Image (cartoon, rainbow, N blue to C red; front, side, top):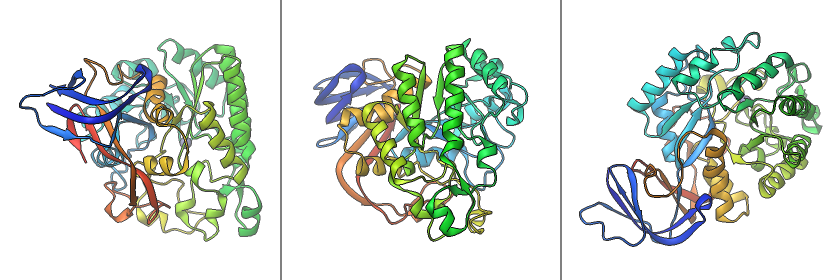
Length: 417
Ligand SMILES: [Zn+2]
């Protein structure tokens, strides 16, 4: 694929690139940066727009294999590029889970066949995600996984988690934890606080997250491994990650847009689209997450895109599944909410996700893949869930007006708008 992107404001913090100029893509790769005639190449006019290295959502659930009525690799990939993401990392809690190389191979080949976005699989930590014995991590690494996680579930067994950290270190893979002490969270459906009391719903205390982060950080220090906290949602967890970074631990963390745009007040009408895990937290937690995004404690924004068929989300609050879709709203929510310089935003959506996962050379430079995200920071737009490319509709952001939009995802020089 050939493409000349003209007059865009190029922002690539890793290469200190911050200039209005052209990018020429030939055969899917960046050929040159700078004013260019381009010859016979199709032109994308990026005047007034930001052109960034491809945005990479490192926490999505594509539901295939096993729950294709909610999402497939193809439809999830379409939602990704519609939201401005050129790449996603797919969590392993499919049915069956991605705990062996045959599933990894399936995801990789199906993504090549059907997904417009690049898909990088994450392997399970434990067989069947049961938390008992390690999955086939080495074989999955050979097949293409970029990290390991039992996401959806935490690894409760400290001994197993230590062994996962030690084993993953041999492949330089990050170990990604869904931090939740399941004894503390048992039967909980929302954040434990004034709202859960008022609504008569069983709460999940903030301590369910922070106590597991604390255990994991101690094991990270012990093993000197790469540890990544998924969807960080509480003040104490943010503080502990900040301290661990100051001590030089190999720790990183991500936050999901719903955890910095909504609080547990959103559950007030028993809206099942406000039910996720970790749950929407208090004002104080939201402020701490935003602070963490500002000061570098939190490295990445990841959507935790979790599609569910509408029949399940129509169940009563107690029985409905956790999770919301997020690929198409993440960029708009982040730019509407966070008042951060564009370079920092590009770090959160692209540079740092790549640094955590190390999937391939990344950025805008001669020879890199022609994977770019084009942003219109001034664009106000309304999210209409009925127009979503995802197969599922479970979003609490339907009808929200957002400012800042990813107007195109360019993957290997091919434009998705
Ligand atoms: Zn999770």
